[in-house]
Length: 501
Length: 106
Image (cartoon, rainbow over the protein chains, first blue to last red):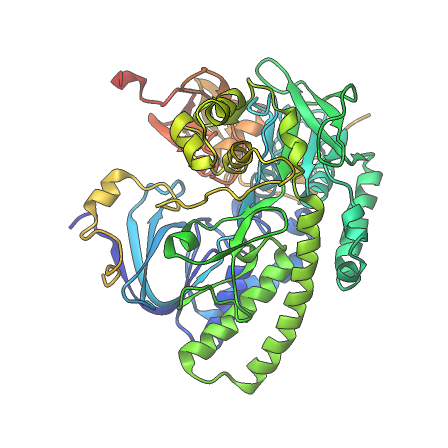
């Protein structure tokens, strides 16, 4: 049949996601002799962290946009030498088991925007390395053009060599005065984003961090075990100082001004619970605002498979993993941000650990060198996970953030549902959770399926003061958009019992 | 003060020759390897659709294909995520009104 998925040979392992965790896991397993397929939506490996310009842009110094580029160069070399099957441009939309522990049918659509032909591969084991995406908290004016995700601004800069704002010249075109980009939200990503934007020519009037950095000082043990993180933070701070960027902690952008694009923002001081301090607002003129409140694990495929989750200290859901990176579903492993946001170095360590564990499982006994290697990796992982917990706790959204929403603020960008309508659903119609709010208001029912508004809607629905951010329901039947025609043309419905091709 | 830093200079880019796409009929330069959203940003264009309910302008937000704010009509096809679709010579991008299927009157 014309539209039925193209078949691939059966692999030992399917790795989903070609970021640091996925590539590390895939090459480790392949080097130990497994037949590995690595599927990723992007054209090039690296994930969001090692996102880099297309070769046609001829970047002689891609490392200028990156921290620790050497690690990726090494991974990429091993990937090329490993002989594993790298399926780039493959958007995996579901994974289905043929039996209780697999084999697994991994279904993907292809093409830049997922509009291409279907592919289905089969594998004895699955490694989920699907990463994370940015958590967004709404505020008045955040839907105005020129307001972009902090990670989004960095992604567009890393891959397309562009800045948001007033037009940033292409090669050979006279450069204009650099766009003024305020960077705001919470989390360590903000410092990296501001540094990169400034190095690339943006003028960054301020970095606005809703927390402060005292949380790190309260956990000196975790900090001392990660001296590299301190050095990284110091380097960012030095770079910001060099570029004349002001860091404002305990502050937030509480309003964006402009008619059809950003012209200025209001920055307000926050109290300990992130409530804006009345009368503290200061206006900063700018062309763009890059904003994000940390990252949340991307768990669509894992939740559809039934993998157990845990709460992270910043209120997100992450996969509950054992010491071998196993999920609660036999035959499914996970690594990197899916197990809790912790950064690229941790992702590499966990990817390698998962690769070793999967090879040991599928091939019988592990080699003695692999046992020693795994022991050392586990120690590094545990240190980094402890630091990640401190980071999450330090930057966890405070319960007072919703005070900066007015009733007209759009919470759900896709369905244009305002905070007023969400509050009405809660106060007048008795909604107590995000799902009920969704049914009453359509918040989270649009194109992005709640990826942007989920945490905010869940928080507004919970209405329990002082509890911070409740986890939002990430369960979605399909992980990426799939045209109905594609589903209709499948030769058998996906579900338990399917996946045998 | 002359402002001579830019992203291309930062990475020492030597791209292939620029080509032209159009946005609402106006020529916009693009570089090989750039997404449509990147080419539009480089030209200072931040919005290329209007929302279904309020008719408000929107452009790229998440930059990685998650938020669907950057939907555009590309070569007559509505609802393409401009941050994921590579720019090709002669592409026509037009501002997408609402759901992009206004002509169906549904």
